[in-house]
Image 1 (spheres, rainbow over the protein chains, first blue to last red):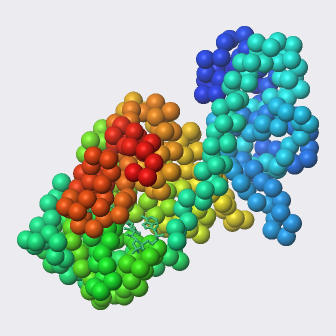
Image 2 (image 1 turned 180 degrees about the vertical axis):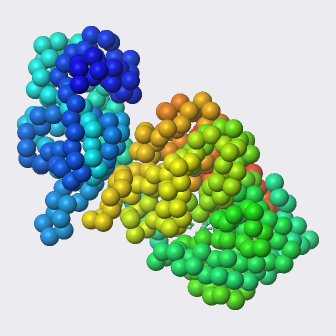
Image 3 (image 1 turned 60 degrees about the vertical axis):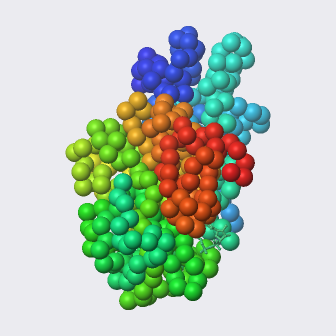
Length: 155
Length: 278
Ligand SMILES: Cc1cc2nc3c(=O)[nH]c(=O)nc-3n(C[C@H](O)[C@H](O)[C@H](O)COP(=O)(O)OP(=O)(O)OC[C@H]3O[C@@H](n4cnc5c(N)ncnc54)[C@H](O)[C@@H]3O)c2cc1C
Ligand code: FES
């Protein structure tokens, strides 16, 4: 997909809404369109966190493998969702597996490219962090509620 | 609202007879029952059900509005009274007072998008809304049901959810807190589904039912999505005794949940929810 197509997708994405145009262009410059087939892994635990995925279509499960019990899904992401925050902090390594539960269309942003641009331009870095911070906070809040196990019978 | 007119003394139950018992989940049973003179109910209302010699508890009505021949209740076995209720078999007789309470304002949602967010057993009190929306589908805009359950094995009304999912005029998404190897759907809190849901926040009415923390989370998520707090309706649960606004057991700030609720809007509830132990 041409860069201007990516820019349009970013501009429309709730996470990037309101981001200044020059930053949208800078982020889009690190992106590409990717497709995964049902059953494919987007990445595995322990691998370098080279990409940030923005899901456009489909369902991805985030899993950790438990010996004897197989893959344990702790969260899924669907259209509009972001996948992966490990690219933000050293050692930039995935801490879980991500598997396509359906065919997936996504945007993948080269993490090194984006990190380098952010390091070179702190204003861009700050703008990018502002877009990703809500994802981190939502994950934290959701996990907190999930841990409360609200639907169990109180006894 | 439908007034209870089964008898003259609202504290004296009438006799109900169990006509069908459906084992839903390990601790949840649905009963169909009949009562002479039953005049129907409005979605969101509840009955006080009693097992003689054990006690009486409020239970929402979870059946369709259109069929007045039976009253449907879905009950979870959590303590002495609900345990005795869940143990009832076909033909058993129990006490019933009702229907009580202020209903979900479903009529006010006509011509608007509707979002129903339910968690766990909270699907039972909102089921009458879904029957109404389906029965009169052309009167409403986009209809979305977001349901959260603990695990795939604890999904309530799974068969019916499957039927609703297959309809093109309903958006139905189910999320579980913990998946298993056979589960191919969403995993995560039900409110996460709100972020991908397609509705016009300025023209949507939302109905939310489930554990109180989940409802608070959902209501805040709906407000973040752009909805007005007055368009978000929640069903509250408090301990009840009389069910008709006499004893004060169900008091929530300035209101009685049994008489003024159990359905309230988020604009009213939000400040009360911030008060601990209320
Ligand atoms: C308006 C209204 C509608 C309701 N609708 C339904 C319904 O459709 N189906 C249904 O199964 N229940 C419903 N309830 C809850 C039901 O009334 C209680 O579960 C019941 O009163 C418990 O009584 P008990 O004697 O069995 O247990 P109790 O001895 O009163 O309680 C046993 C244990 O269960 C816990 N408990 C009590 N109430 C609840 C609750 N609401 N949720 C979770 N845990 C609880 C208590 O903290 C205690 O630990 C409703 C309550 C209200 C106020
Ligand atoms: S239960 Fe008696 S006032 Fe509400």
